[in-house]
Image (cartoon, rainbow, N blue to C red; front, side, top):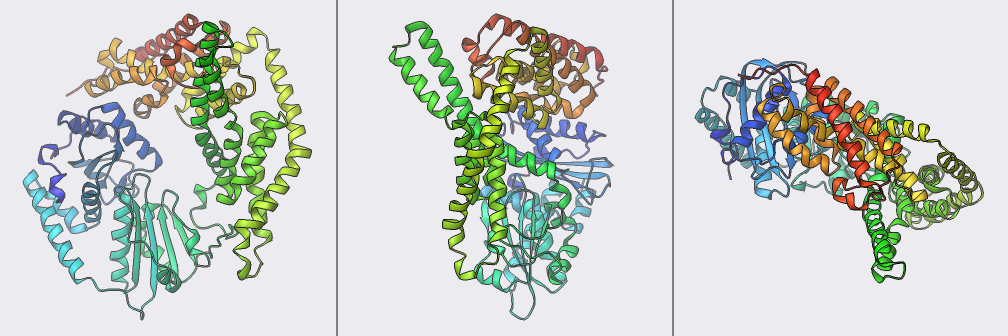
Length: 621
């Protein structure tokens, strides 16, 4: 398969009309939709915007490669667009973007398609090709340029010389979150620069195809330095004792000479498997706050399936109890199954927080600490503390036993870390953390039970509004985690009702606004708005992200107000949802379902009308 098999002529826009980043994305996404490449504009655009939020795909040198891999893509394709005047795409070099390659990859795309996309990405670091593409006026010229580039690449690969033992060897690993474009562009950029510098290099890619060109032990032993240009986790333990540079994948494209020189001069810190290595480059991306958030989210993301599965089955069991009584086999079966899953919540939370901090050795003491928190009635808060405590205890043990003879290294993961990690974490949880947090947990629950209606409504307003602040980000997750904690400790789903209503309002309100105020939205936005009804009904707040990215002040501002109203009303009317997810699909489990629907409709109407009145009229060409 050739590049032109996915770089289709009918998808090319030779004169892009947009003059802003958001408008360019809309124009390209709509073109993909019109040609049947994607079947849902909102879902695909949400993937594009999520990737842009991580780091701009404006790579510099006038090139942008927005890309997404999700369920909206029916067939793999690449859209080429050219802006003669250029536009501000927030590129990494601050220069306008002229050439755009929007990659649409289906979930589970086969290796052949992924290899073609990788080849396309590699081609775009050639400045001569980019110059010619800017001058191309027809789709046929674009195809001809890539055909020529592919032929040249095949000739180069046939002549490529193996690494020698007379020149220094640099190793590199490249990876990006989607594993489609940046991974392979960084690979080619590093290889090209190393060839110019007369340096041997081996590059391993961690892309959508999996791990390609894996580095061997002999190569690692020989290497003078290792470059990891990655925006996702890659296997690092094999590089213990080596000078290792960690940078974003974009640096692997744009700062190749700097990285290779640093690796050659052995200036980078020596990486140690036991986690005691000095901080590597790119420390600005690993602040204390972001590290704690990452560790916490690792625990919560692994816990959520137990919360959702166990919580919904428990809620269904209560329906059977009301209908058939406590002796019903259906009630007993569903309650036992759901309750069993629920028993894992806090141990899983604590275990995976600890594992995020200390890797696999942290899992045992973390899970055991979480179970001790449950047994001591320390609850959700105790489990959080247990996870962080266990993780940092294991890191401390790694430092303490760093000086052991190398011959005893094998004892660390199978004897020293599990036994001492469990013992120290267990003793602290049993004698100190458990009792202290049991007291705190009981006091907090008693405080919540004694809240008057007014204070409960205020808390509902706060939780509902937080769900709309960042629509899946830290504020949203904090409100959800708080409600899960109360639900886990008490079985009371009152605050779950507040966060569920608050999370449903933004997409529902946007969908309604696109219907009521059609002249305030583009055609593509109106089409996307319809799918927001489905996402909102399913409690998928992220459906609102593309709209929030395009117009953050109006969309987020109106959504916060509507979500806060919905959350507060659920508490005013004593609504409770004994299920942590599902939206309208679990309405049969809701206590006071009509009041929940009224609260949801009220918040949605307020947000939709406010957004519609606030937005200016859109003039489409």
